[in-house]
Image (cartoon, rainbow, N blue to C red; front, side):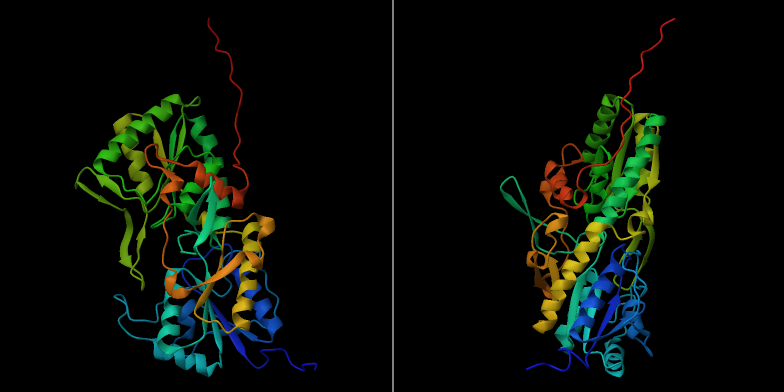
Length: 410
């Protein structure tokens, strides 16, 4: 018998985005909106994350509206608002959230975010029973997706989140460009890259020619600092151009000679509603110590927001649509409290729904870069990580000036 209405006609699905922006959020919103509309949902967009469900609400109608998914960032805007009590804000604002969900007649909520945004959604589902689906998003790539990477007969638990592929390509390009300046001045450049607790993004600079890397997973103690500086000296002297690019995560814990402590460098110790302070400045500290202790000219360069800005790259574009296909499956089965993820690392052409699965949002958490991806003795990225990254970026991309001119003797 022919049905007169779509399956979910009369129902409303809302989308919100929280936390830091990525180049893939608009692509995620567009893909989820299109598929939800196909099922019959009216689709709303909540502006400024959880903040858009406080007070009187800030809600837009995305149904049958044009949307540019290639444009980076989020047209719904973002915030780091936490509806649950926190150190920054002890008030419980969940009743306001529930009131607005009812006022706007929202039946299902899809939250695009990292562990903080989706963690709040999980609590809302567990404590209030509201239907939610989490959608992964982070350039740090440290959201536990339980994605398997098979390398040399071994299965490594990896991560792949929308936003990371575009950001990784950006970091690769940034490192490739900065190499020419390092070579021109026979200089060491310390490239500081975002990454609070994990080195996934920073390590992608190796695809742009960065010879060394420091990641948050392995702290630089007093002893390791001495080894690191000696390794920098050796690599610099062996370099034909007498230059190096060293990629450093902003969250690297570094030994301070003055205090005798190992700690991160804070740009500001004021915390957001999820308890995070703003990091920054470690690149300048390391460059200064290289110059002072090795007598080799070193400068700091900060990649900053470059990695998370700009257009959605093609791998991300297809990844977001693939995971949105999985959202359809979850909606059809009314399987809430879940997050769609890629089950194992695949090439661009294999980004299809049959290579996805979903995990309970209570099992997400954070996942650092595995030890298999880093050579702790040489302070460099391993072959295993390059194999992992090749699924996303293909081959390393950086120019080389191959000529070697004869020296003139008078």
